[in-house]
Image (cartoon, rainbow, N blue to C red; front, side, top):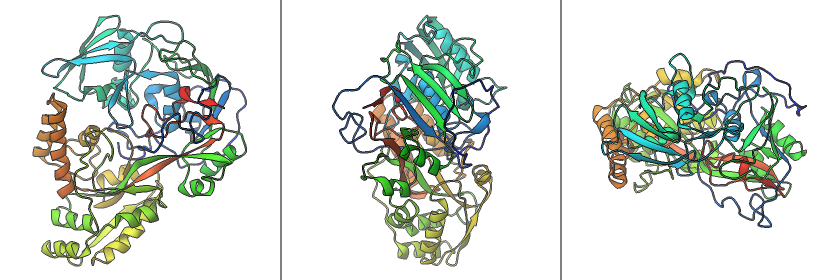
Length: 541
């Protein structure tokens, strides 16, 4: 999905909860990057150091300590919040969901699928049937996780009457034909050959719940590392260690998620000792506190893809020479320095830097105004005027628009910057305009291609419609050998690099803050991936 979803969740019940810190609500929400036609959301990638480093977020004395309650502050969704994992929409929702529940697989730091509740998977020769074996795991009520629980969960998500986030991701599965072949084994029948089937198991929101489970806000039962204690939507959720968790009990006794919508509220709560973990901090905050000793700043490097989307089927961008000229107008270093305050690195007009299948062998594109002017002249667009849609909906958008406007002027292009509504921006830019600010977070490159760049993709912000490109995707999906499949993806990316509609100028850091006593926070995990918000691996020194 591309950036931020504006979809609201249904209002859940609001059971009693222990008193929680009160943090005034901000309206700018940190929405989950996920797959699916109804959502547009985002963030993440790699960094330096890993869990267990001795830098204030690592092991320190080398030994995890058991006990204590960690309080984590996230931007929330008010009274509409829910613990239904299939409705997880915000970063806070997902952090809570992964504490209570598990998926069959999840994404590693390179966005490749890693086994979770699924112990192993195996495809047939034609890649249209997959056998999945579950590991031995139990729900919080002591009952084993079975194949029937998995089928129930996926069929619930796929309900055509519901708007669950992972529905589009599960679409390739024929759930009527799929069946349990044992208590811990499932045969998934697919509608077409799908080499990247493990990505479906790892899809955002594809959590496994007990068979027939429907009530999630009063006493949800999952198989995750923490079990439910209390929940007050828009305020607080408290979970306690599940000692029988299949991967080992968490170090913490309890985790409390508190809602603090304003970034300043999260920072002040962290500085004042009201919380020990603050999600989504601004670059200016990071610079003010990094290395000062009071709190720790954690940078998840190369996280959110930042760029501009050009509508390739509308003038002037229906001429690939104009698109190529815009690639050459961009001074990526200036955009990263100005729009991201230096908290990021330059891009090369391709999504997924550092992810599995990324085409990292292509030359780094540099600004070349002379060549840009020549291409515009060839296209008959020497005095081009174009509107650039932007919004304050995402950090750096308005700054990037202003910087690029000034860069374009040097090539004889006049850009009119139009600032749109934060509430409707993501839906507006899918259908209207010709050029817009755009960002995205963590998802496999395969998912980026299928959701945004195929003829029938529902979030095709660049209007990239090419049947031969679609055919290459289908070829990749039906190619069993990983190297051969990577070669097809590389060919597709070379096409996009040469004449695509995404001008991807940078990748922003994703910034967290923690108290100095917090250890075990992973520094390589993109948001929305396995080791992001892994509070079962965190401890208090």
